[in-house]
Figure (cartoon, rainbow, N blue to C red):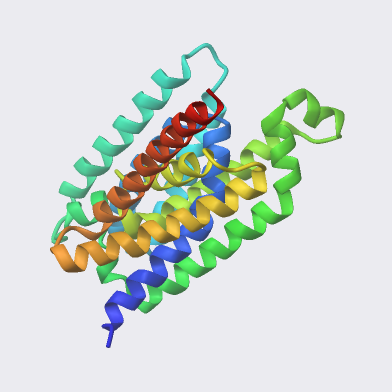
Length: 270
């Protein structure tokens, strides 16, 4: 008999995999790795504001992540190097959030749970919030999939099709903010970027189409959730980092398998 808290953790992780897989593909294709990290780090400030004003932490992190993402999108292309801009905003937001938490009177906060996730404490209300957020992200991606792909391939191509690349970017930013809010409880602010990057990067090795890469990324993320949770329960390791470690192991195994396959094919052809 599997304990209820393990089933809730598994459900939360699989929900995250459903949204992070296809959304992460756009993060990889658009080279937005640091963008995801910056948005996630800003979520810690959302935790502090939510606790200060007595509102839902999910709502607080969603609003903060969205504001952070919009600020980053607005400042891009104004003469600053993108990596410099993202680095300044990400670290500033994380530090400001940690300082703000320390000023909250009478509030005891386990910062490690927000930084590295606490998936084993996910409750029924968290699951409903995650399901609503993931459903919204999947609906956005299904609605704008072709438009997002066109804008990702080429902004000129998107304009020739009557699309507004800036609007498609905002759709992507909104979806990213929602996933950050959902993932904060699962893998924490410091590891959200890994779940957006590693499964799609692994899927890219074998995928032959954008849709195939998105589906493979979902499958790999789900496998990482199952393997990471199992390892956490058996080895008594932190669950969130164990999930990311499992995902990294799949990535390393895929690269090793691809290199071995190329070596075998080259010997056969020689």
